[in-house]
Length: 357
Image (cartoon, rainbow, N blue to C red; front, top):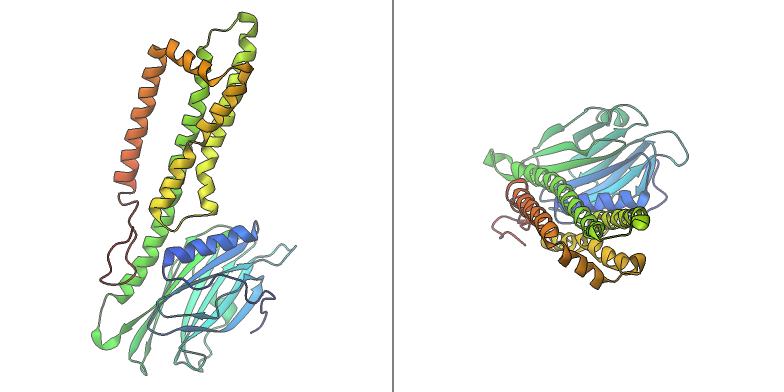
């Protein structure tokens, strides 16, 4: 195993669904920080375990090691990064064997995330004892998706690897899926299901990002709008400029607090979609809480004084509040009913299992 990592044992263990593996790879990247890297997710949608048998590093190293074994039906993830203090990329290849190092089929997963240029990937299926193509060239086989197949006459299965970029920039994420299909059955849903699982996981990640932006934007709007009401307060001419500046500063602080708080959920994402959405909704009101705290000390005024200002300007405040409320309800309905129609439901992990919440 040439170029083996010096950080053996560090990494995430296999998980039972694609989305959890993607989240695990993203977490490894957050722990590593900035720099060229490759997040790797391998889904083993076969009836046999995958055993790590070799790895080659042509540029870079493991920052978090690949799992030595990916059990049947599980997903593994790891992180490969550039060399420290060097202008280089992440280029490597790992080899797994089905059912142990002496199994009848081996799978190779290669990638090339260069310092500059096009990101590439490659996959290969081999029989036991077969040499295959050059491993460095393997990782430079495709600019986009790649699919290879190989029949296993001993086990009477057709094996397929599908590879694609889940993220394609200076920190790529490559999602590999190995699946099997009984040859005597012809066709079958195993391969389609495996590909569908990875596609659904990638789509779910995109909608999670959109959901985060949704709550952050409204957190900023609500947080900034609350203190702006103080601009309606009657103020002496000589103090008006200072009052407007102070109110504007408070509004900016509250808006930024309301915008940033929902994004904090990404650093500790709950497993449940409902819990994640509820956490973002709760944190969205951080800007309002900051506004209450800031306005308590603003120019020596109290929250009661703020309430009196609102009461004295009801005909101005209420229409504005209704407009915001209507816009919030409309955008919420569009997002959760059109953009993401099933935000709280998670796909069942096995055939015949119910949808989970």
